[in-house]
Length: 403
Ligand SMILES: *Cc1c(COP(=O)(O)O)cnc(C)c1O
Image (cartoon, rainbow, N blue to C red; front, side, top):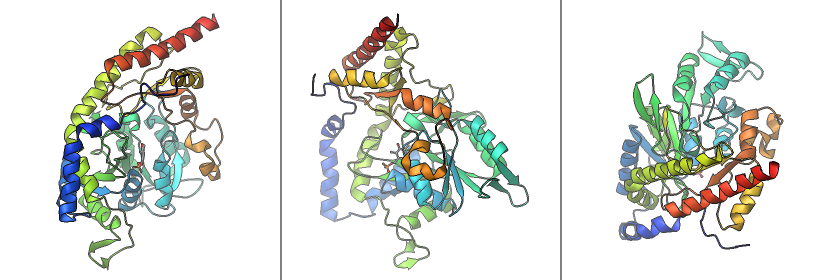
């Protein structure tokens, strides 16, 4: 067995080597001015990232998880409220809901996009909730709690189907907060607006993560909220900075959740390359699609819905017997991942919600079959061919064995 990785799942070394001089100049500038917190580098990044998302404001924070939590609070979600999201996401989405004092409720994903299924959201609202038109509140019947917000997760770099979700939001008066932590630059064609919309510009606020492995990654922890709502942006700024709009005048209790100036500087350097990197990821994804054509369905490739332009944070396929595939890939020195193996409703952390196997069948089916293949802008065509070749070898040998 090979124990050295020939083709890594993710290469974080090369992009930083290429940008080393520019990144080091950010460090020097920071040290020379001791501008560690706030200041021009932060302002510049916030302005440029807001522009990149077609949003009016961007408020930098210390992680994607806090971006979500602060956005919920800034949007007026309070203790006892319900926030609806999908069980097929990274746990940060639901951690942030609980940390904001709200209750998690799950709605299943769509089988071909892996994002929130608007039909299932409608069904949840129409069968489990009651809308009081006098006070404009949507309330879950069993718990009597208000549905304050819905969080579509733009998973793997593909946006959720936002039009029907936003229509429901208008009809039933809940906030839509996008989890765009995997979708920097992804686009959605809105029929309602008859225009392409950027991830982060559709809900009342959107959370981004700049964890190093994301399409736009810091050299450490970082996140941001994009919004075009001035009141939400103002509240975000207070919440991330101890509830103060002015030093030592605390209108509310907040958090220490600011984005470091140095990380903002690194992010500005990398933001200039993001559109190009995303294009390369799209090209790589389309090459993978073609390479897997000959598998005739035994490798289910990501389906890009006509209303989306994905930025392939991850390239996720579905195969039978994926643990065996992973073992074979790893023996060949090829890195793979699973995003995510255990649906959130079946995690020990959410036992108190009382869910069981079978409650969200699409999520459960998908979680059992997915494998993420190497996907990063520096992946070469020949490496990619080798990855696809190994996967095809695996599925063909399985078909042979079954005969
Ligand atoms: C990465 C991620 C987060 C959390 O971001 P951090 O910066 O790691 O806190 C939240 N949601 C999703 C879908 C993510 O992929």
